[in-house]
Length: 132
Image (spheres, rainbow, N blue to C red):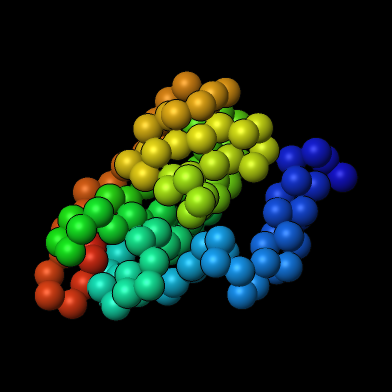
């Protein structure tokens, strides 16, 4: 088994053990229409950071305040590993090599040198809309 595949499998398995823990990222479903993801604002009632499934990598969405949100592709710019939400540090971390990112995707700690890909976000009374 390749090292990257082993680490990905280990991360998925350990995530299963963390069910019920406050540090477990919230994965939500979004309605996709054209090139946008529609997420109910109510998903942010208990948490400020969520993950939304999207093609090959998840999208991380952070609530800044009532009407301001940020969204990034959770795909590390170092080696392409899936990036996790790190609730305790209010940001994102790559489990493969330890890169850390701010809620808006800026590199805080290497080895990644490039920021996470950002998406434009808008909202209305019911939805947070991530424009892909």
